[in-house]
Image (cartoon, rainbow, N blue to C red; front, side, top):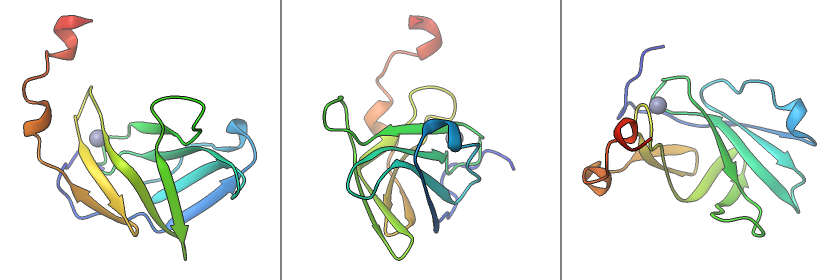
Length: 117
Ligand SMILES: [Zn+2]
């Protein structure tokens, strides 16, 4: 699948696993949650642009930054927005399973990651 930031995407599959080793590689449209419903630890998903990047989103409040996850009828909401500082630089929100692409202006001023690394 080609990298297509801004494409209309949904996440409508939610899989719960107990351990990071059970995650595998989530396909586009699926979110794998590590942990239990009471104590989710990680949300793992493929970047919605299709670039193939796998995002590991921390849900544990003991680690920062952390995101909040809501799941209802296999529809996922994640807050705040997610963005990739490398590669495709996608910046998006997931609400009720739908991807809302955010403007790129928020990170236009960032130093180029290749230059600073
Ligand atoms: Zn991407």
